[in-house]
Length: 72
Image 1 (cartoon, helix red, strand yellow):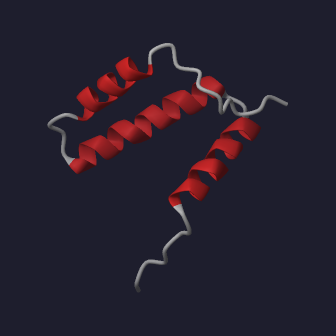
Image 2 (spheres, rainbow, N blue to C red):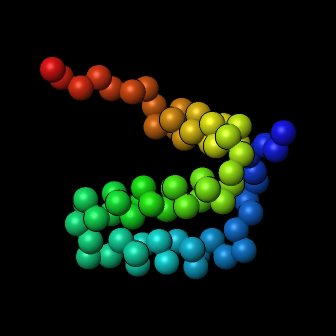
């Protein structure tokens, strides 16, 4: 089973960061969230492997810290 690539694998990380920030420039928070969601789905489709995607979700969730409960 493929594993998530955690070593640097960008051909040009600065160019990607610049393109990402440009895509969000002058967008509302809701528009930026839609861009991020669409980007995640496009990249998840490209990866395609459920195990790799779940590994990425686990690592991303751990980096965010514990989930906070919403007040009722």
